[in-house]
Amino acid sequence: MASTCPTGFDINHLRTQVLATYDRVACEPLGEFHFHRGADYAADYLGYDRGELAALPNVSTARFAGVGNPHRIGPIHPGETVLDHACGAGMDLLLAARRVGPGGRAIGVDMTPAMCLCAAAAARQAGLSDIVSIRNGYYEDLPVDTGSVDVVISNGVVNLAPDKARVFEEIYRVLKPGGRLYLADVVVQRELTLDARSNPDLWAACIGGALPEPELYDIASTAGFCEARVSDRYDCFRNTSVEGKVAADLRVSAINFFARKQS
Ligand SMILES: C[S@@+](CC[C@H](N)C(=O)[O-])C[C@H]1O[C@@H](n2cnc3c(N)ncnc32)[C@H](O)[C@@H]1O
Image (cartoon, rainbow, N blue to C red; front, top):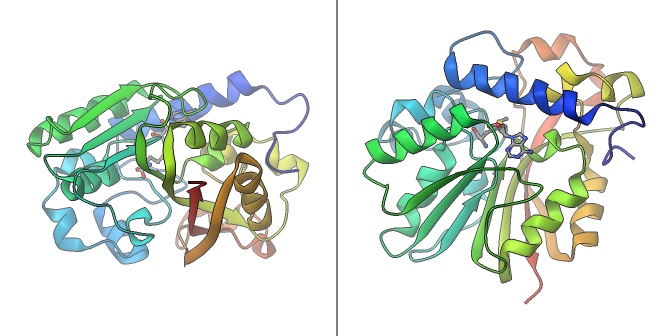
C-alpha cells in the first residue's frame, strides 16, 4: 500500500529532507525546485483569482507551493473557523481569513519555522493578525482543540506524510461534527515502484508519497469521513523537471477532494 512508506524507510531522514526543502522555498522562493511556486502559477495552472492574489502580501504568494485549489471545493462562510494544516507561507490561509472575516478564525500550522515566520509576517502585512494565528507544529499531532474547526484546508501536503492514516485521524479529530475537508493533493495512476517510494528527494518533491486515487477514498472512509468526492483535476507538474524523472504512465497530477465529518 502506498499509504505507508516502505519497510526500513528512515522517517527521520525524510522529515529532515522535507524540512530542508521547504526551508529553502521560504528563504529562496525563486530558486531551482522540482515544482512550481508563486501567484502566476496559482492563477495560470490552478484557477486562483489573479486579483485576489494581487491583494495579498508577496511574502506569502511568492512562496505558494500548493498543487490544487481548495477554495474551489466549497464555500468558507463568515464567522467560521478554518485550519490550514500545513499552511506554508499562508496564501490559502489568508484567502480563508478574508472569507471568515472579523468574527472568524484562520489557524495555520506548519513544521517549517521559516514558513511560519513568512505566514505570520504576511498576516501582519495584510492587517489580518487579529483573525490569523500561526502555530509551529506537525499535522500528525495538531496543536488544535478537538471539535473546534469548521473547515480544514490542505494543499499539497498529505502526500508528504509517511503515515497518512494518522493525518486523516487528526483532521477528523479537530473538525466539528459535519465539518468539511477541502483537500488538494497529488495522485498517481498506479502505485509507485519501491525505488521511487524509497527516494526522499522524490517525496520532498510531492511525488514519492503520492497515493493512487482509490487509496485516498479508502483512508478518508476509514477515518470516518463521508460524502467523499473529487471535483477538479490539475496538471500541476507541467513544464517542471519532474516530467522527465518519473514514468509517463504514472500520470502524476493533482485533485481537489471533498469529504465531510459525520454529523
Ligand atoms: C508543498 S508545501 C505546501 C504549503 C502550502 N500548503 C502551500 O500551498 O503553499 C508543503 C508544506 O508542508 C509542510 N509540512 C510537511 N510535513 C509536515 C508535517 N509533518 N507537519 C506540518 N507541516 C508539514 C512543509 O513545511 C511545507 O510548508
